[in-house]
Image (tube, rainbow, N blue to C red; front, side, top):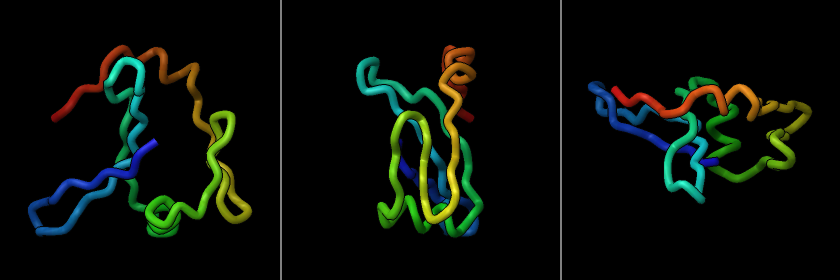
Length: 77
């Protein structure tokens, strides 16, 4: 799991949640992130990642690996 950023036309960085599969050396999934609290947590490493769940504060995000397997490749713009 990686937080990535790409410069946009306003010279700011758009943030993306990226899942990278190390064994196959490819990106499994990426999604733009707009939630500033989540971006801050990912940047500062103030979260726990275990068994497909991201825990931070009193919140949890479940990653559905079964649904990610349906997408064979990530399409890039």
